[in-house]
Image (cartoon, rainbow, N blue to C red; front, side, top):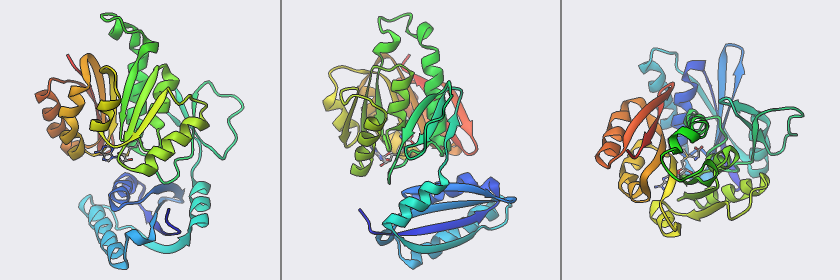
Length: 306
Ligand SMILES: C[S@@+](CC[C@H](N)C(=O)[O-])C[C@H]1O[C@@H](n2cnc3c(N)ncnc32)[C@H](O)[C@@H]1O
């Protein structure tokens, strides 16, 4: 674990928030948060100090400027400072607030009290350095798609012997484990969650415990679909995968191999302009793209096997 961190503060026009999140994520930021400041938005990103030199930060500043100018918005300002581990966790935690997602979910930071009255399914989270606080559009699109998928369960399972509470899912690129936990709260029986980042696997395990979910209900492993395939006794009923388009395209054949004729899939982390390439790869491997959900420049494909 890093001892010192860069804290990046970007003051921007609100319409730039999503693209800045995306830039920060590709730059290697491990935690992001945003708050409204008068008519502007202040986005903070954190990354281990050893991961970036001053020159890298200068390049990031240039990219942010170019991104803004490309869409006709004024260039954001980027400030950075070095903070230590303790300050990193406390400053980031200060800015992350409970958030309702879709019609059913409430994401509650682990260090805040639970709401007294809420009809929502509460996901308690402390993502640590893993991705998946629910603040990002790509995660929200997945949670909303899961909601719809589970709301639809009776008709879509009418042609199979699978009951809603028999659903087993694969969560590829699990990050904080937010999607596995969400699926279980919606009624899934079990999730297999994998991530190439060991810190993400650790985070999924601790969030599983935080949400009082038994270890046999969320099986975690470090790695990707190849590792997950070895853990499975039979094909899964659903796949959620919120990684970037290029990675999804590469993984489609392996994901298809863990599917059966009734399996559904939720693929996110895809920029709008990349959706055709991902849809083509899916269709080539026997998937039918049923819907494309869009939020700002991101989209999420809801697909089924037949
Ligand atoms: C955008 S985050 C998604 C986290 C969480 N599932 C969510 O929806 O918020 C993508 C995650 O995929 C992981 N990842 C990247 N490439 C991967 C691969 N080839 N196989 C499995 N995980 C991968 C990253 O480490 C990261 O934790």
